Image 1 (tube, one colour):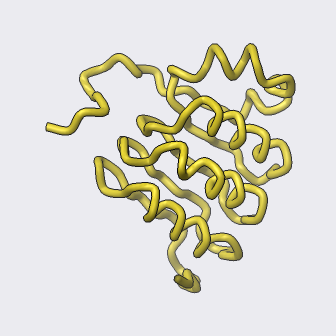
Image 2 (tube, helix red, strand yellow; image 1 turned 60 degrees about the horizontal axis):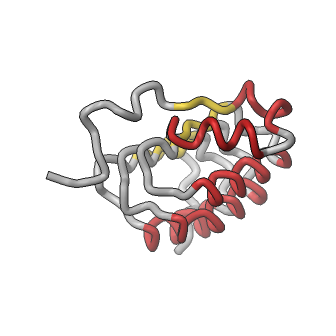
Length: 135
């Protein structure tokens, strides 16, 4: 899969529309893309820990993304910690959205959180009417 489009700057795939396989393919395609600045994948409960490594690798290798939204997914805290570690090396990302359910453990467990906290945003409503169960 190649993503050589030079005009697309934002990719939004939300609301139960993608799973781990799709995320892995997108991450591989975007690894060397230089035009996409925003990747929004919110409300996709089929994005699980399986995607954690691919997302982390994307952050380590992509130089154009400035925003990544992974809120309301099923990523594990371990995957989130891996992504936060990659954020340390990727200074281009200015906005990373994550599930609030990971906030406390990430802040208390990740030793370098204070160095990236101004770029990490936690969804404000994890307990809202959205859930991992689809209708």
